[in-house]
Image 1 (cartoon, rainbow, N blue to C red):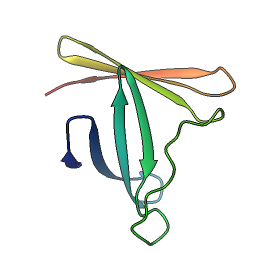
Image 2 (cartoon, rainbow, N blue to C red):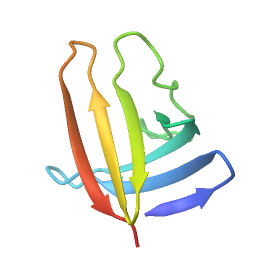
Image 3 (cartoon, rainbow, N blue to C red):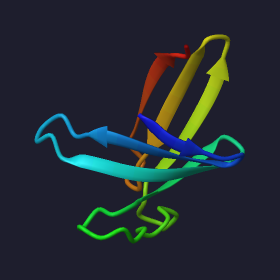
Length: 87
């Protein structure tokens, strides 16, 4: 669920499927890259660090027609992609 958005960032909230824990993340966009941080992950309202370190995953997106593909590359070089229909 999108809670808010601005020109270059969006705040999203979701429930983790395995345990139902609610998470709130802020995502900002730099070209085709998504950079994110948690908000209030440990009971407060503080924002965590932006995931831009050398061991953080690299998340990219590509829009094509009514589809968006998200590709995540991890620090060990492994990666995965998921495609979604944009409504």
